[in-house]
Length: 310
Length: 278
Image (cartoon, rainbow over all chains, first blue to last red; front, side):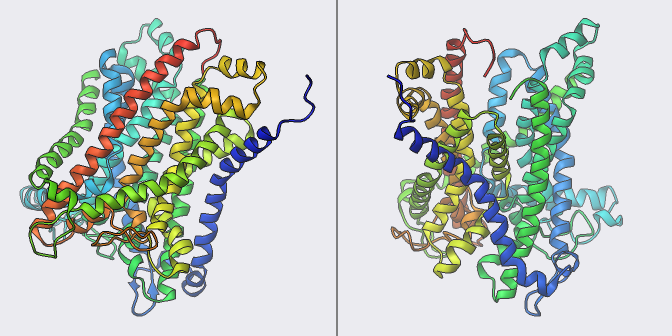
């Protein structure tokens, strides 16, 4: 029997799944739109002072989020510097170097570690890392190494600090970057490795000269994904950074991040302008992470496509 | 050089294992049935537990699943069906981007849309936010699992006269279901640990609450509040709460990955006749 029209069930089904798929772009557009609209009053009033001003004074309606923005950038930078080499090493270990029987369990372990909630890292940070920094690391740097006078390590060092936040962030994003980088390295075609080995390269030379250059943009993308994660991380950072709304001048200074600002002030925001300013700051964070994540995903996608994996 | 990289790789994993061990040790000391079923005691008074927080997390995750699972399933089916069309690639890309957004920004968004018009915090707002967080995770998992179903199966069903929706419902989904279920469980575990979006949607509640239009307690929120408190007893309970949270996430994660891997091995074996990889 030739059926000339599609059955009703199919039409409904196709419409349903298309609608579900369209929810995702709709959500993103809605997200951007709502936050932008809610931030308008503050943008009209404060303008560029929102991102360039250094004073966040709610009582006098002065909203300069520069300390928070700088704190976010610095803590993420510290986290990247600490985590990237180790993540690359872990990725190489799980993708290339580990013996076959160890690879999957190790990758499995790293993926699991990436799933631990951030409030747990924050808890550990408050009760283990910060006292460690306060009692051992900071005195070591200031007294034993005599770096207390150097601007980067000066100022009161009582534990919660930019450095603590950077370290906690590094520990958090490390498994995340490692698992993305592992996927990227696995996407490199076997032919590249075999060609290098056939030309007489040692194991390490093969990795260094054949695998890594092929995956270069993907590696960058993976690191940027970690950056995107670090920029938006809220709980663990809020618990160890000291929440001092001042531009930090030293690693040991308590500082602030945009996410912490939102977490601390949002539920008790007083006044429409305060709320609107917080929305504007959230919008800045949203825009930054959108750009970083979008670019990073594209880079990773490029390597996977070149390697033959969709 | 190889040894250096190996060493660095092990150094990378070590702090995480140490943290887990620390949580297990510190968390175990305050663990008891009281902790699991009782309300928090007043500040400074020893005893009490996080029963309402655990119940609250379960309620929030259930609400999140009502939103996240159907939409994620539908989107995943769409992406698996239309693999490389422009719209499908865009949706897949945007799902990954949505996945990587700071959860606090989603909380702010939900506040503006759900809390502000209502005039009060509510469990419903928290549940919806977590549901939105779940969508990209479930989409990804569904797409991957449906892709693993051999094309021959659905082609056979279509050849026998099944309509498309019936093929999906009876053949494709039934084959991919265990994988999708485990993917959904992983998404639920991920979402159960989220704190930031709940800070200004569900807000927290020191009592039992079954009304979804009122604020509700949640385990990560409680751990956060107790960690920042000045009371030793509460701090010890924060460790136990963290232990419960981590055990939940890890247990589901381990089960899920073990189940998914055996699925992938099965599917790879079944697709021996196909010329291209998934």
